[in-house]
Amino acid sequence: MMNVPRLVRWSIGTGLIVWVTMTLLRLAFYTFFNKQGHSFGALTDSFLLGARFDLRVAALVTLFMGLLSSIPFLNPFQSIRATRFWHTILFIFIVVLVFFYVIDFAHYAYLSQRLNASVLNYLEDAGISTDMVWQSYPVIRLFLLIGVLSWGIHWLLRRYFRKLSSQPVVSKGWRSFGMALVTYLVAGGLIF
Image 1: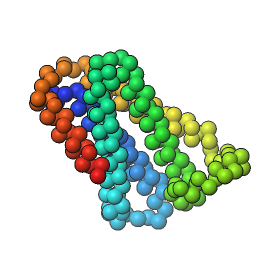
Image 2 (image 1 turned 180 degrees about the vertical axis):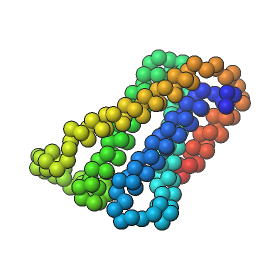
Image 3 (image 1 turned 135 degrees about the horizontal axis):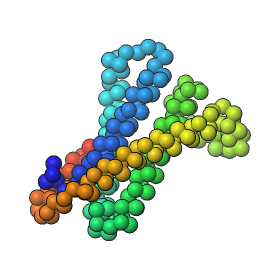
Image 4 (image 1 turned 90 degrees about the vertical axis):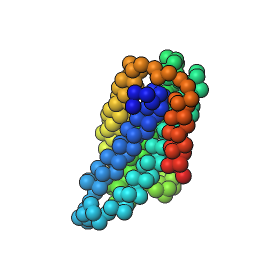
């Protein structure tokens, strides 16, 4: 793995962390809300479908990171500004991801229904909806949970980046270009 360019390892590793995070959140949902007593085996097809969706999201993250960071001024291993840019982008992505999962958990706990587009109807009268949310959900604890989970995942991503930053640079050339090209073509294939 040492002959693989750091940029490729970073984008693949970040994609894998995103995939594992989404999979663990899916398993947590099953664990907390399996009121019908379905066995894990009975839901294998559902979990495989969910894993495919999660893998698509992770592949999209990998491809996005790989292609953008190939531009020299956006390469986090060459510029401190690029490093800050990527840490900010990834933190925002993680917060949004965790936010939707936590809201999905809360929505299901309250209404026994997965989060869907029907919640947009609540935006018609935002004042009443806000009061209802404040009275029905533990809003402060949910925001604390979002903050703690987001910080933990982001800490893991930053630690992985620091580990890669301390490793030697792989010489650039056709081999490195070929590895990057194959990696991003596979990621693109996983999206579709």
